[in-house]
Image (cartoon, rainbow over all chains, first blue to last red; front, top):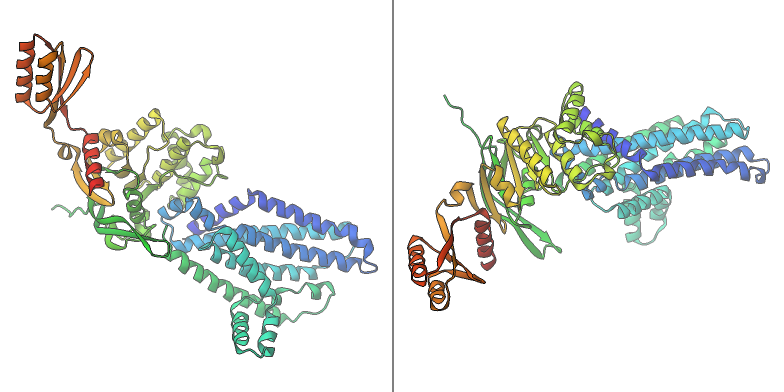
Length: 255
Length: 315
C-alpha cells in the first residue's frame, strides 16, 4: 500500500517539477520578493516591515497559485489523457490513487514553500534587515492553509474540468478569507434566507483567515499558542474530510 | 483428481447502457453478452469500430460498471485489487506521462504492480529489450511515435508477469515488422501458459494467431468458437476462368454462373458446385473454348464478417 501511494506521489511530484508552470511561478515569486529592494526607500522608516510583509504575502500568494493551477488539474488530467487506465489496471485501489496524488502535490508545495522561504531570508540578508526566526511561524501556518486548499483543489478535480476546478477553488479560497464577515452578515441581516445561507457557508467553507498570522509576526506581536494548535487541528480534520469525500466521488466514477 | 478449471474471463448477460444528454438518449453498448475465455488460449475479440469492444474491456478492467449482468476475471469481481495483480492491460492508443522516460515509466509501473524493488530494474531492462525499445529508454516519451508508445504499452502490461493479458487493439499504429513482433510476443505468452484476450478489427491478426474468436456486432456477441468451427471448411464456390467463349455460348455460360465478369477474351464465372462445373465444361467443349483456371473458394473470415455486419445493418 505504502509503495503504491508513494509511487503515485513521486510521479506527481516529478510531473509538477518538470512543468513550466511551477518554474514560472517560482521565478515570479522571487522577483516579487526582490522588488522590495526597489520600493524600500519609499517606505519611510518602515523598510523592514515592508520587506517582511511583501515577502510573506508573496510566499502565500504564489503557493496558493501553485495549489490552484497545478492542483486543479491533477486528477482530471489523468482522466483526460487516459493515463488513469494504466494506473487503475495495476493493483492500485482508487483511494490509494487519490491519496498518492494529494501527497505528491503537498510535496511539491512543501518544496516550493522551502525554496521561497530560503529566497525570502536571503533577500532580507541582502537588504540588511534583521530576519528573526519568528517569521517562520507565518510560513508554517501557510503550509496548513495549503493543506486544506489543496484538498479542495483535488476534490474539484475529481469531477470538473481543470478551468472550472481552478475557478471554484479560487472562489473557495476567496470566500474562505471572509468567513468572519459571513458570520457578521448572518448576525446582522434582517432576511432569514440570507441569515441561513451565510450561516451555512460560514460553517461549511474553510476558515482561512485563522491561518493568516503575517501581521502579527511582522509586528512581533505575541500569538496565542492555543489558537495556533486549534488551527492546525482544524486543518487536519478539514483536510481529512475533504479527502474522504474525494475518495467517495472518485470511487464511483466510471471511465 | 482434476481440479475444477474456472474460466479466466466469464461474463453473464453483461449489459451496458450509456445515458447521454441528461438521460434522454440511451445508447445500448452491450446487450446480454455471455462469454467464457479459458486458460492459456489466445482469444480474439473481433468487431467493427463502435461494436462495444472497448466498453466490454473497460468492464473487465473495473473501469466501468455493467448496467446489468456480471463479469468475473480470474474468478473474482474486476475491481478487486487481487485480480489486478495477476493481469496486465494495454488500452487502445495508449498515452503515457510524456515527461517521463520509458525506463522511468516502466519502473513506476513495476512499483505499482508490486514487483520487488530489487527486481524492478532487471524486469524493466528485459521488457525494453523484448519490445525493441532499448535505444529510446532514456528519452522523454513526449517525442515518441504511436508505434513506440504501443511498444511501451505492451511492456508495461507485462511488467507484473501477469497470468492474463488484455490488449485493446494492440496492433494499432504498428508497421508490418512491428505487427509481426507483436504476434510473436503474444504467441510466446501462450507458450508460457498465459491467457491473452485481445480486441481488433483487423482480420489478418486474428486468423494468424487466435485459438478462438468472439465476434461482436452492435453490442451483441453473434458468434464464439474456433476459427475452423466458425468458418466451414466446405467449398463455398468455384471460380472458373474461360477463354474464347463468344456469342450464344457466352450467354449460356452466364446463365449457369451465379456471377460473371467479362474481361476481353476472358470470362470469370463464379459457380456453386461440381454439377455446375460439369455444365460449364460441357458448354466450353461445345464452343471449342478452353478452361484456363479452376479455383475452389473457401469462406474467409472476411466473407463471414461482412455477411454478419450486413445482417446486423438490415436488422
